[in-house]
Image 1 (cartoon, rainbow, N blue to C red):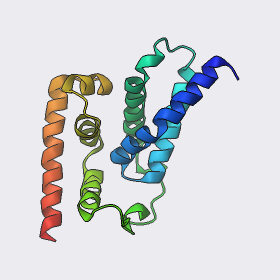
Image 2 (image 1 turned 45 degrees about the vertical axis):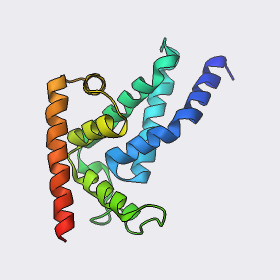
Image 3 (image 1 turned 135 degrees about the horizontal axis):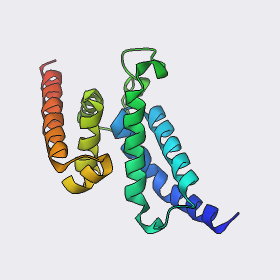
Image 4 (image 1 turned 180 degrees about the horizontal axis):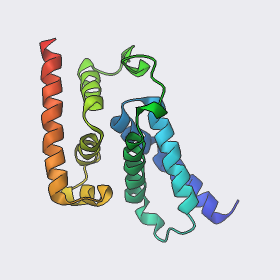
Length: 164
């Protein structure tokens, strides 16, 4: 095994769980999150020899993950199997997760993908407006408006859930 492969393996072992959590927040399904992470790290591995600064990989990996998610969403629903109206991940709540977290994750899954990506990067990954704009390759104004719309959508969905 080459030194570069060993470096990649160490990076994957250290960061794959964190990226899987981010991917889950983006797509709302653990199986799709696993697929997104696998696609992301495959892309990273293919570019690993060309990457100069391995110390700054988290930002690059996060950007690749978000772009992979958004690209997948653009291709359309026909690329994914759907057997029901809700993913099986939400059918049986885990006893260690509070109900509020499940409600929030369910509502987040209903937010449009671009707004969801902004919300996850800004409020889960704790990225600044500028960092989020760089990751999504858009303006800071776009990030602010997407965040405001996403939060409004999320609040509306949570209000609807509260009424039920």
